[in-house]
Length: 216
Image (cartoon, rainbow, N blue to C red; front, side, top):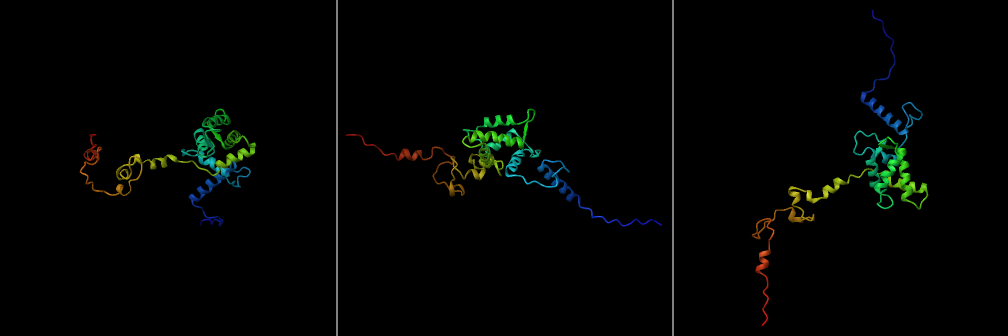
């Protein structure tokens, strides 16, 4: 006879996908806290501030491997440009580059969120000289909070009629102005000129040119 094992109460096994989601959620919450798994406060998720959310959006821009914890110089410059920190007067691209090099660690190529705030504080004092340090920082933070990278190149290309081809190209004149109905329908040309002839109408001007009477 085979020995009967006692019944052991156990919870039903959870699908592997759900376990993976739990691990990912726990990792994100611990990353937000800046603590390791199992550390103090790791069980209490911290909601990102609008400024930190903007930092992460720009930090991962154009880099699928980025974690959002650090930001390289190119995206730092883009953030300052897209959010209006750079105004071409009190703050220039050169100022932004200098501050980036100043706040980052000597051997590092990226800046952390804390270093990011330090850099903004430097620029804030230069941008808002008539305000106190805290007031200037608050003004700069407002420019960035909740913002995301601007992808302007796509919009520009879509509006550049010189890049259009096929039937779309025929709907605009060389200046980019729409032709209206003429650009959407095939209108029969009864002028007698070959299509595309550059000197169209010059003959009529010569023939119909008024004659000037000679003085008596």
